[in-house]
Amino acid sequence: MSKKEILAAGGQAVIEGVLMRTKNKYAIAVRLPNNKIKVLVKKIKERKFSAKIPIWRGLVMLVDTIVLGSKALTWSSNQQIEEEKKKHRKREKNKGINTIVIIFTFILAIGLALLLFKFLPLWFAVLFDRFVTRVGNVTFNLIEGFVKIAIFILYLFFISLMKDVQQLFRYHGAEHKTVHCYQDGKNLTVKNVKKYSTKHPMCGSSFWLVVIFVSILLYILIPKDWNFWLKLGSRVALLPLIAGFSYEFLRLSGKYRKNWFFRALAWPGKLVQYITTKEPTSKQIEVAIRSLKAVIK
Image 1: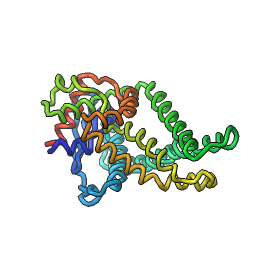
Image 2: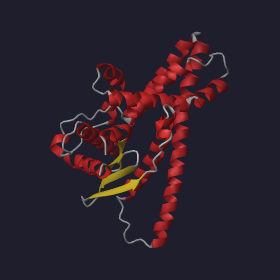
Image 3: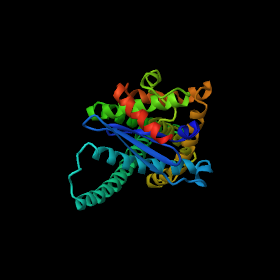
Image 4: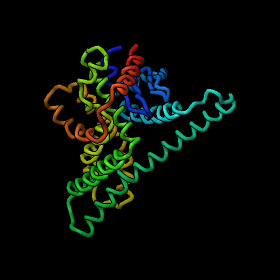
């Protein structure tokens, strides 16, 4: 397995564990209540055609990541509950419930994201333009973008105060450290992994910040004098394009992560990771290593 495949895909933190994925499979490793590590490895249908189309592959990867992430969170959560003695029927029923939960969570997440990062920022910018002072199209979009960033940072800050989320962020840090170690060609040991940073240029939290910056640039093309709902609809319609551009930027910043130019551009995203990643324990690093080793076999 090449390091470029890990670079292009990466992973995420889950409940008491870490998900790692490449273009053709993923692995989830979790620490069970009995202190053992359980690993799940599954193949992913490779998208040979869509993976080669710039911009479009970003949208495909985003959807895949959200769906797979929801499944991984559900699976990792279930591992914390002993279900060995349940009857076959009940297990089958639970699978159906999990699917419903995943679908409901996905719809709820999309709705909440549209409310927080599309409706509210635009609404605030419209109110500012109408009742405070008239502004130009560029300033209008800068105001909207500032509100988005403020909501994003405040949201991350407040959830980071929760104990369970802090644990999740430690596993997030373990994931980044482990990938860094692998990309540098070092042996995957706890001692080696500990030396690396918890910040990574291709982090998902960095991606969302890039999305906000790209949206500010693209929304300048939308006339400010359109009515509110037309402006909102056009912003939603541009989401696939925004996601695509953002993904391509992260690919480049990850590929040239040691280049000063891309390091400078990735700097705001790394600042966000001071909230979304925490220093992991040795046991958490062990879990991340098991996950990565399983996916690169």
